[in-house]
Each structure stands twice: as C-alpha cells, then as structure tokens.
Length: 340
Image 1 (cartoon, rainbow, N blue to C red):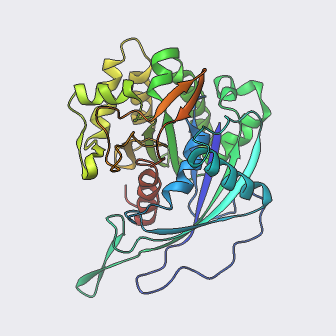
Image 2: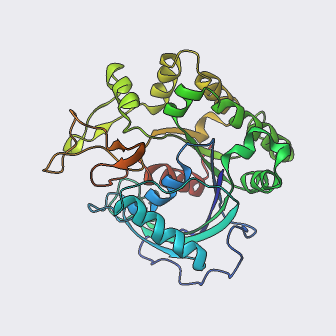
C-alpha cells in the first residue's frame, strides 16, 4: 500500500522563479506541519510502485506538455528507488517489484507549467497572469497493499491511515483488470474510507471528507480495458493517434456496469459518497503507454504494450506514460485554487 504526501512548498507568482529556500531536513515519509499534501493508495496489484516509477519518466516528457520538471531525492534510499525503478521500466522493460515491506521515501519536485494547459490563471490588473512555478515535496510511506484488507492485522496500516488523514489531496489507483479477475477491490477501499472518516470526524464538511481526490483507472493500455472503452464509444483518437477519454467519470460508471458481478459499482458509489462532487476527478491512466508503430504513433491494431515471456510480463516497446502527470497536476491546481 503506497501512501504519498506531496507538500506544496510554494506556488510562485508569474515572473518569479521557483523558491530558493532549501527544504527542511525532515525524515523521508514524515510530513511537516502545514502545506498541501497528497496521499496515494490502492489495493494490491493496482500499480502503485509502477505509477511512481512512471511519474519520474513523465517528468521527462519530450514535448513539454506537462511543463519542465526537476526531481530531487531527499536521501540515498529515495535516490536509489528513483534511479533503479525508472531504469527497470524504461531500459530493462520489466515492472518494478511490488512492495513487500514498509519503506519511507521522499522527493522534491520543482516545475514550471509556463505555456501548458495546466498553468493556473488569476486576474491581474484587468488581465490574466499565470502562477506557473510549482515547488512541492513528495514523501512516501510504502507498505504492502494487503494490510488494508484487515487494518487490525498490521502496525503499518495505522501509520498509513494517519498519512492519508493528514493529506489535503488523494490519488486513488484502481486496476480494472485485477478487479475483473479477483472482485475484491472494494474490501480494501472500504476499510480505508471507514478509518479515514473516523480520523477526520472533526474536519468533515457535511458528509464529505475534506480532501480533493483524483481517481485513476490504471492499465488503460491493457487490451481488455481498452477494447471495452472502444466498444462502448468512450475512447477516440487524439494527437498521434493517442486514445483520449473525454468523460472518464462516465467511463468509470459504464465500465462498472460492463464488469458484471464486480465490486466496481460499489467503489464508485463509496467514493462519491465520501468526497465533495467538485473535489473528485476521474482519469484513465497507463504507466507504460500504448504499443506504437515504427513511426512512433499509437498502433491501434496492436495497442497493448506488454507480452508474456515464459510467464514473465515484459514491456514490448518504448515506455510513454499516459495520463500520469495529469492527476497530480489537477490536484495541485485544485488545492492551490482552494475551489470546492
């Protein structure tokens, strides 16, 4: 179970560079008081470790559609994870190993969203001017997802819940392929939401938890998921043939109905019951991206990017993360704007 905290240190106004203040030398995984924090969680096999590795690669986006980013590790262990997991994904073309034990990690992200669709806008003397500089810290308490099926059975679960409870924003990873096979994702979500409501009882806003949340449907590149999206008319071709889902919330609900007998419908209802409607957004994501032609365009005849070799899953083509930065940037902008 991965629990991330993104502390937004400063959102400098347009014309000013990122803050030059050095981050406090806090222990990785231990959030400082104040600031905006984002937590990440999901059930086993939802792709948490792979998502983190892909987030680093997405920061290197060649066409700068997410802006320019620098990622700085807070300690040696965090640096090793950053280097090794990215290499595993992009060079070895295999998947990072899932979390087997609790570990604390931390990074600092410094970005410039100038010229991107994600640059926040504000009024300035009758016109508009963007707050494009972003500087935040991400601290991670990573524990195996299995502990959230029964919160009473693992000491790490208590600390993980505390991390989520003190966050301002949340990233929830949901894997439709695992749900279709095992039908148990709701068991992990339900325990977390129940404990969060208890921890945040004095901060509830009416019936809602106080967090902003991005719900990420992972592994969108999987043929089983993507074929369903095409069959239902939820995906169309965007730039370079890259699939676009314009209504991810609607797709989530449709997929829940299409996965007969799954707990996905319960998950959607639980999430919408727990978070304010204006603070919840849905995304279809892929840590590795789609299969491509020799010219680099998405190959809709072979859009899957994974193959099984002797029982081991290997990535076929180049890794091009899809909709990995978007959920994070959406949360950052939502928290900064303070919208409901």
